[in-house]
Every structure is written in structure tokens, then in C-alpha cells.
Length: 214
Length: 214
DNA sequence: TAGATTGTTAATCGATTAACAATC
DNA sequence: TAGATTGTTAATCGATTAACAATC
Image 1 (cartoon, chains in turn red, orange, cyan, brown):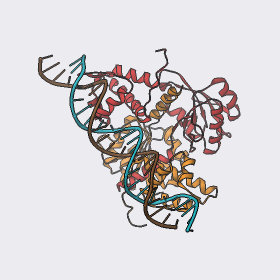
Image 2: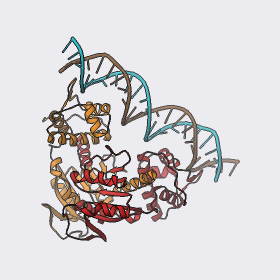
Image 3: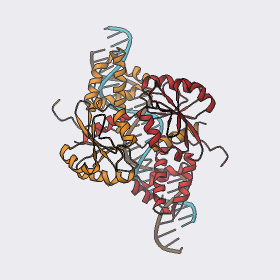
């Protein structure tokens, strides 16, 4: 609290599951359940109890032998771990269908992410605001980023402006990317932290899996 | 060709990379490159040559020693493997921001997926079509699914109707789910093929990773 | 033929699962 | 205290990487 969070070496899979645990704990809390064992939670989430305990213990011991985990205590610890209370500023690049849907569909505030500005690529939109987020022309990117110093950029543009813009942003010291663009941002940018959401890959993967079942 | 594709046991990670390879091969083809080695491709994609060869060889030998891979030949083989030429029918459940963005943003046709119908949950929309896709009230789901027998359902609704609707769809023999809903469909549905796109988990994971870097 | 690069087997690495002693 | 369930170490499993013989 107040001190820098220790840098713990965990795999992305673990972090992703932490986020699932948090979601599940919120549900449990809503249902008025105050206590849960790793075994029960494993059944409910389709995992193993062992994995859940391993995951949690890579951040610390939040349970009590013979009792299990307090839903409230564990939830609040996972919230700190994931940092939902720390503010994180983001810019959205690309206000097409997807960018628009993201702004309107995702409760960024709940995750401590605030979208400072959105940037319009080649006159995609005629509005000046979406859901309260101000839309600026792409020309204003550099100046705006310099002044508001966002930690995250949400890339929802076609590959071609995408590659260029990502490079620019990294020069401007933006290192976190939520990448909806079919561009590989890791290449040549070892410092970038990239979370890819490649919907086309996802769709093709599903398509293949369905084929296998038939 | 004409015969049933053999059911090959590969991990989801491999399939997902196949889709990346396909995307990359398309780019190479556009650039007029007709030949590529695993080593070159590994550099371009930030992978190891070994992994690429392993991945490809779990489906067959598409290369030639001393030469590498023909871009065109490999591309067409991956297309067959992923089945982009086989038609796949899908229904979209939920025409909110996200459902709408998916229809407008993703080139389903390119991946051999055709969206037969979209279903409106609780009057989300007043249109009757989006991008040529007919929108029906959710009451019509059962009858429509029985008659058009889609292999895939795209779930873009809130968790609560989601859980219920998924159950219904499985009863109606729809086993493939592209799941944008924060509901765990695997549980209790061992037959379901589910590809989860949990955007909130993804955002939280990125948020954590950014925190680690700082 | 010599050089290059695959296909494939073996070695390594990491992640998941199992087991159990510690302890509430 | 006895029973339950964690935290943690050890065993297993699977995926990635390395190595190299086959061969174009």
C-alpha cells in the first residue's frame, strides 16, 4: 500500500486465471457466499483445486488451513494484485465499429482504466464524442500523448495505419497495447507489453475445432 | 477432397498459430514472394524455425528439403486444414454494440462462415437487418435453429440470458460457440466446442503486465 | 556434387497435477 | 482433539527447442 508492488514473475496464463477468479468471487459475493474452498471453486470453474492453490500462492497465502478462503478477503487481494484501483490512462486509436463497440460495451471504469481520448483515422466518424470520450483527429495524436502520457493504447484500426501508429506511440513512451489489429507488435519492440485480441485467428481456430468434432 | 478430413490431435495453440501462418503467407503472396524458409518466417513472426516446422508437420510435410516452402502451396494447404472453403453456418445471439461491431467488422465470408440470422434480445435494436443479416426476435430462436441447423453460435449477450440460451442451443444440437459472454460454457457441456473471447479478462491481464513493467 | 533446409527424433523447459506435511 | 483444507514440494505431463540425418 503506497509502496511499489513487488515484481512477481508469473506467466500470462496465471494472470488470466486470476482475472477469472476475481469474476467468480464477485458472483459468489453477490450470492451471499462468504467462504470457499479451492476444491469447490475448482468444481465451479472446471479447474483443479491444485491449480487454483498454486496460482494464488504465486502471489501469497490468502487462505486458512482447514477453512478455505474468505471470499471477501481473497477478492480484495486479487483486486490489489491486478491493480484495479490504480488509475490507468488509455487512448483509443480508431473509432470504427469496433472501437465504438469497445467504448460502449466494456466497463473500463470497473477495471481502473480511463479512456482519455479517442483518435479518428481518416474521418471514420462525424461525431465529436462517444460515451463522453472526446474524439480527436489523428494529427493531434502526438501532441495529446505528450501531454496526457497514457500507459495504454487500444489499437482498433486496420493493419496499415496500425503498424505506423504503434511505432509512433512507442517513441512517445507508450508501452502497453491492447491490440485488435492484425499486426505483430512484438517484433522489433521488445519493451512493448502487448495483449493481442486477434478475432480472425480466434474465429478460424473455432472453425477448425468444430470441424474436428464432426 | 470429398473424403472426411482426418481427425488430427493437435493443441489449440498449434491451430491458432496455423491461422497466423496463413495470414502471414497472404501478406508474402501480396508482396510477390513465392518461397520461404522456416527460418525466415520465424524471424518475421518472432517464433523459432523449429516450432514452425513442428506445427506444420503435425498436419503433413508441405516443404522441400534444401528449398523451403512454396508460399502458394503452403497457403493453400493451410486453407484446407482450417477449412475456410467449407461453408459453416452461424447464428448471432445479441445485436448490441458488440454483436453489431462483429458483423460489420469481421469478414466472415473470408473464413467460410455465413451468418444466417441474428437474434435480438429484449429489443436491443429497432432495425430489421444489419449488413444484410436478418434480425429476428429471440422467440424465433428455437424454430429457426431447427430449420437452418447452424454449426456455430456467436454469443454476444450479457451473462444472464447467455447461460440459458447456450443451454437451449446445445439441446438443439449447436455445439460450436464463439463466446463473448462472461459465462463458462465448458461446465456441464463436455460436448461443446467453445472459443472464449473474454475481453474483460484480456484487459485486466494487460493492465497487470503494464504494472509489472513500470 | 555441395549447400541448404526440411522432417523427425531427442533433450529441455515450463506448466499442471498429485501428494502430503503443516496447521487452523 | 479430529477433520478439513491450505501451502508447498515432488512427480507428471505436454509443449517448445535443439540437433541431426535425410534429401532436394
